[in-house]
Amino acid sequence: LETGATFPDHSDTMAALSAKQNAFVANASFGRTIRAVAPVSRGALQVAAAGMKETRDRIASVKNTSKITEAMKLVAAAKVRRAQDAVINSRPFTENLVKVLYGINQRLRVEDVDSPLCTVRPVKRVQLVVITGDRGLCGGYNNFVLKQTEARYRTLTELGCEVQIIAIGRKAQQYFKRRPKFTVTANFFMSKVPTMDDATAICDKVFAAFVASEVDKVELVYTKFLSLVSSKPTIQTLLPLAPSGELCNADGTCVDAAEDEIFKLTSKGGKFEVEREKRPIETEELDAGLIFEQEPAQIMDTLLPLYLNSCLLRALQEALASELAARMTAMNNATDNAKELRKALNQVYNRRRQARITQELAELVAGAAAT
Image (cartoon, rainbow, N blue to C red; front, side, top):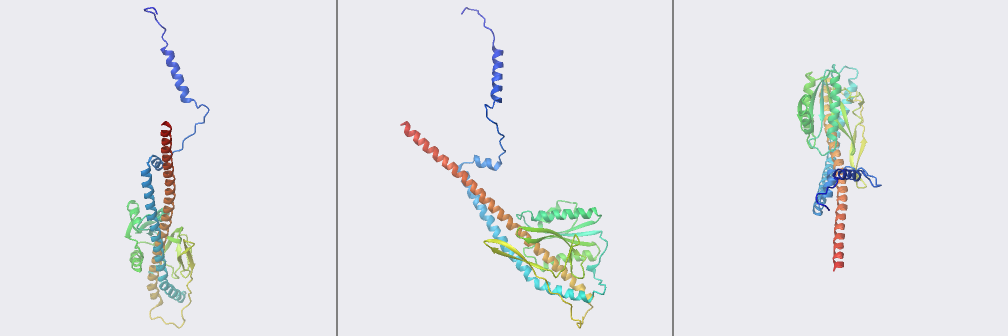
């Protein structure tokens, strides 16, 4: 080469070719179809990134959790039986009360009963008695009751009624406390086993407000116990009472007090089931020769508050049974989910262990072949 010779500059050409090559490599599929990768959950990524020791610890943790949820399910089942016994034990008092109430009502059917609990007034102020639980871990039980209360509150306010609330249960108290639009006049806690004293304390508050004309109507929002997997939020009119003892819901559908039914928790084939049995109360007219020491209207004024207490106690028992049944179902689902998760984790752990053994064998074989 001669000194001082010059060469053409191809740097621009090379840069252009390099850019085209990079664009071709980036965009080319080389005959393969590019598939969209589905998003992976955080838990799955944690399991995929975890080592064998972490996976083993996770399996042990899930196993312990399934034992806890299984124990909570059995505890809830035992408490459902206790609630069932409470309903059965209170039945004789309810039967005799309904019989006497029916007989006196038949004696007074031609008269106008002037009882403060039967007074019907134009509805301007309504009191809602809302029954929820004190604890969670029971699926959507509390949420269903509170949503029903919200819907009823919205309906009444649209009609121009002033709404007051009596909250029974810690969950209801917490819910209404965070929402200042609700006017809560009293709070009560839900006991583990509702008694007549609990119902009397609530009824005294309701009775005083209704007799003093502070409210014109009292409605009860609770969950009616249907089965272990089914419960129905119900709105029932507490006051004013019908002299015949009929119970009416918000739609005007009334049920005779004598048409009672009880529930029984049974186990068939290793599974819990609930059977509802109708046991109508035999009512008959009182003896025509029966002489009342007091006026029948005065006796009616005494019996109606007792009947109101009985209705509220039954609602508390039904709500408690519904909560326990919902907790049984939630814990059963949690136990099943824990078993499925444990099975999936065992598969992941076994695959990794097998892959590790295969890798060690391959290394041994390769080392032996090299020597």
